[in-house]
Structures are given as C-alpha cells and as structure tokens.
Amino acid sequence: MTFDTNVIFSNLPEILDGAWVTILIWIVTTLAAAVLGFLVAVARRFGGVLLDRAFGLVIAVLRGTPFLIQIFLVYYGGPFVGLSLDPIPAGIVGLSIYGAAYFSEIFRSGFAAVPKGHIEAGLCVGLTQGQIIRRILLPEMTMLVLPPSVNMTIILMKETAVLSIITVPELTATLSAIGSQQYAFVEALFVLALFYWVLVEITGWLGHLAETKLTRFRFFNI
Image (cartoon, rainbow, N blue to C red; front, side, top):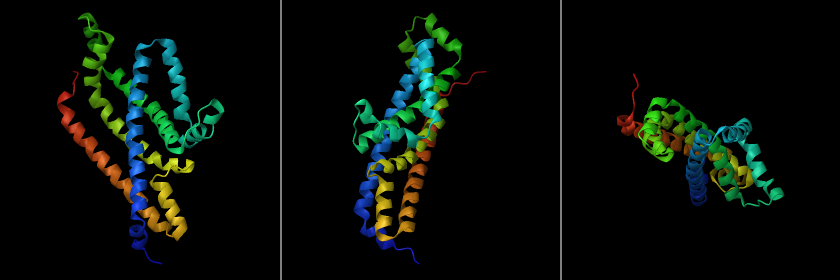
C-alpha cells in the first residue's frame, strides 16, 4: 500500500474550493464572535446585575454543551422556531454564537484586570462610559486578551471541521468524500491535517507578531 499523490493533484480544484470555504467561514465567524463577545462583555460590565446574570446563564449553557449539539440545534431545531437556514449560514451563526460565549469571558477578564483607579480617574475628569471603554479599557486590556484571543481563534478554526456534519462543503467534507469515493483515506486525512497545521502555525505567528508590536502599549502597575 503506497501513498498516492495523484489522488490529491487530480482533485486539487475541489480541495482548494473546500479550503476556501473553510477559511471564509473561519474568518467571518471569528470576527462576528469577537464583536458579539465584546458587546456582551460590555453589557455585563455596565448593564446592571440583571443583565449580567442573564448573559452569565446563557454563556454557562453555551460553554457547558458541545458545539456539535449546538450546531444540530441551530440547523435541525431552527425550523421549529421559524429559523430555517441553509448549511453555510447555519454554520456561521452557530459557530459565531459558540465563539462569542468564550470571547465574552476573555474580554470580561480583560476588563476586570484594568485597575479600578484608572476607571475612577476617568470618571473624575468627566469621561463618559463610551470614552472610558475607548480610551482606558481597550488600550490597557489589549495585551492581556491578545494571547487567549489568538488561542480562541485557533479553536474556532478547528471547529469548522464539525460543520461537515450538516453538509457544509468545507475542506473536511470535501476530503472525506474524496477519501470515500477513491478509498484514499490516508491521503485525504494527511492533506486535512497538513492544512489545519499550517493555518495554526500562521495564526500563532501572526499573534506573536501582533503581541510584539503592541508591547509598547503594555501598562505596568507597581
């Protein structure tokens, strides 16, 4: 039994299409999850006790259940509440909500790490809540939340493989079909593993580069 590279090259257009779908879904869901998670973190911090507890309960449920179950509920359970989505939109919605739960906790911990004295100083000079977030919280928390945010970005990338279960034509679904049709499971899985490994390495490198560039904004509290 040999490793047949012809299987890869003969199906290269389909593989590239699947890779593009994977990357597109990953980028869109990461941005959506980060924005939604930030808004939830802000709401929990400044929205009062009731809002904090309500979002806290939702986040606990999302973090406490497997993503596979969540995407099944979005795709197959959506029509029961009037939400009928095609596979790709369902995947984007499900993965964005899943990632937002984790991003919200990352940002919330970043907010909590900013010294209260800095916020009180901003209030004393007449800054609004929006100005405090923009001029104090965001700059000071950036370095703190960058490493876990990069890690969460990588997790969302890997979770795109789960979307193949609802027939999203991403790379896992494409290579699984190729492997089944041509009995080339080893070759298909090798390409899939290589693809994700390369993306992880590139993402990690970009995260390290961003952390290096942002070091000058780090706040030391002695």
